[in-house]
Image (cartoon, rainbow, N blue to C red; front, side, top):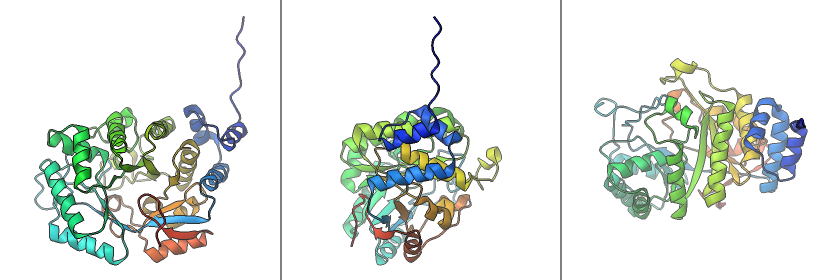
Length: 365
């Protein structure tokens, strides 16, 4: 007896599935990325955003991205920021007076959060970071959103600690939350090409899982538009969604496009970045797929103001950070900058009310 072949669902069927609050599968997510037009995806993602955030508000935060060191041993192909151990001319570890001055400048403009991450320095173990976090907390009323899963894992191994003990000690000394940096694409094949010395997808997820179990909140990210396939982009969504189902610890999802200029990756893929349409389509499908993450952040750092403003109608409800300092993406060729007033003007021009927030997406006066 010949089996009956079932026709795949049409794109309208997939749109109806999302509107009925039904989950997309990996194959369906790939179909949307490959076949759906950008305007239809934007309209649907905006519907999901309004369902989760009916109020006409777009949030942002005032923070500063401080890199305590640029010495790193991971040699990621997409990074133009790091310097190898032994580079006495350009390698650095920030002195405390310089760090304190940067924090005071942040507080002067109303900053509430310190984004603190840097390289995998072979001489900096958990004791160094504990002292750093305690010194900051003793001096300043600031939230430390710091390190990355890969840095946390490296610090623990350098100090011969288990992962739970590493996170416990860092948290107790003042680390309040962990950014999703270093996720890139959570697929082994991709990471073997662009960041083979970093932890793999399973370990990245394990660090986040343990942080969530210890009561810490974190963010999730994705850097795309390099060597990954569309299927691998959606597999990344699936890994994030599955962990969020388990722990509920992610506060936001932040996707951005790879900036290959001035990096070894430029030799593989050339200097061009993913297009604005590719960014918006991927952003919209992520909003449809990641139905258990409430907040999506624009990437004005890589896209600039106009596309970031447009993204507010493609599923985004948060404009990110004023980010009075950024040293990693800028060294790969992205040079966009925004002041607090500039961010608020862009949000208002898009038809929304700008509101400041903290890491937990609580609105501030």
